Length: 258
Ligand SMILES: Nc1ncnc2c1ncn2[C@@H]1O[C@H](COP(=O)(O)OP(=O)(O)OP(=O)(O)O)[C@@H](O)[C@H]1O
Image (cartoon, rainbow, N blue to C red; front, side, top):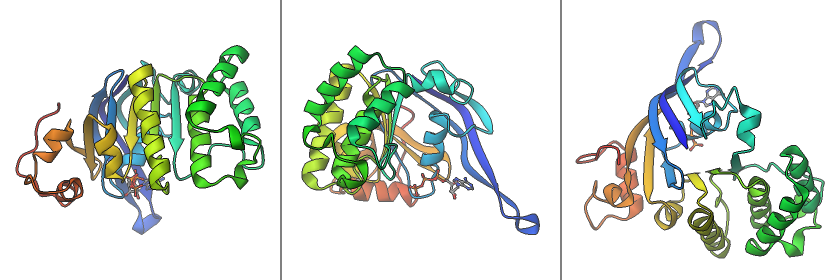
């Protein structure tokens, strides 16, 4: 469903004598199959957002080959938009001054979702994500947790095959976080939606992801199951310790791609 083959993305920063090239992502290859729920981890500045921007067609790779749902994301951005949903936890894709319901109506137009499908889907999502109390509220008046549920709904109204999440639980309280995780688990299990999840919250990874990929300095440093990940460190280590060891470059043996 998501295929990267030797993908790289560099940026030129600075001017004249201070000019240099930053290799945000280098020679990155992985495949995410339909129906997988994959965690995408890495320290700050590792290249996660750059990868997600390439997968969603926002940024073009400078090298390599990338396909999402069989499409080249940069060349077929409009077609891809119908197959993919994206949530950036740090910013909203909703219209700030409009009631949530009107934002969804605009999303319906943008994605050309059939009116009957839209109504059915919105009523399902309203129930599952408990939106009824604030559908008429302007987005700017929503709490972070409400806004996040609104963003997730907007990303799912067109029933995408792939969902890409960039820190979807950031800033959520324990109850909202648990509800969000429960929803995502069901979405993957019941609808078979393929999910790629970027997060710094290792609870998200433990609760949701069968497979974990770790990127460091733009390259894949680990790809395996959660158990493979734990096996890289002593048994008594917490998941935070395990990941911190990998981030700081210590690991007894990394398993091959799983
Ligand atoms: N538009 C840009 N111009 C120049 N450099 C960039 C640009 N976007 C990203 N970079 C650089 O590429 C590298 C990877 O950045 P990226 O945002 O992908 O990391 P990240 O893993 O998402 O980090 P974080 O966890 O902090 O969000 C960093 O060194 C960053 O400074």
